[in-house]
Length: 397
Image (tube, rainbow, N blue to C red; front, side):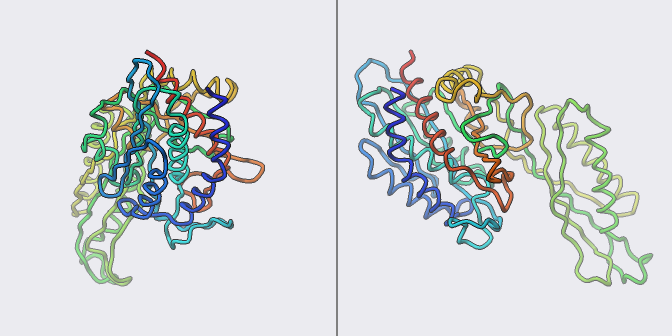
């Protein structure tokens, strides 16, 4: 069967590359993926035996049922995220983003066309398998957790998916290889907002006010000691602040400063300890300067936990498809976060990293970089691997 799948993937490869380049040139931010949704629906609607359902405003679910009568009726789900990032594309290539300040800097365009390719292969080979496959084209991974909304809309049910598989591009890996990991792969993320309030005053008479910029600066520096002094190095904590806003004019002390960042952890008790330390440090530093600090925490995505049996299945298929030398176990989790984690809270799931780098051509810039790109041969390998994961899953009792 793998030979037949390879033939079909090869036949549609050029088409998928053109689709990826189109998506890369026309990226859309989270919850604004209307044209991306239209492209997905138009493509899927031309395939035989594929049921297409728009959902959660900008998402799509496709369902395909095999025609082979084997008595098996297993159900598997595959997921691709479809949104882009608010980053200016600085690459010099023919498919550079045409949308100012918006770019597929995280490879979701690649994820999308891989899943479109898998759907086309399965549509072409419906007579070769039995069971049901659900394809989740999911919006808003980068911001508001589109995965949870699709789950809450009931798409894992009726019939209930037995497992969900997904992938993410990895520019640190050469094309044709993958990383897998048992257990925790991506971190839990929390969004942090610390509002520091002082008293405005003339810049020439700072003693008449309370400088919230100085207080906020000291808070940021003080918080850096939490990961290095308040938790064990083995607890894997990342605390970063990416945005500070405050002040009105250059010749007056700022009355208020807002500090925003993220906390990434892998253990619930460590998370609670660190959040308590953040509040303790921020409020006491502020108090020492007669200012105030208030912490607001918005819980982000949970820890992404891979199911052992699902990983075993994926790895077994990958050894056959890619060759054992290209199937690499990642020893440590990544501090990134992923809303695919929500799927794992409902059904067994496996998420793995797909190599997209070509080091000789300089295609190895990190995700979320304005220079990010992929070796497009990764589309072939991702499509082939996801298809074979699906077919082997449906064949097993």
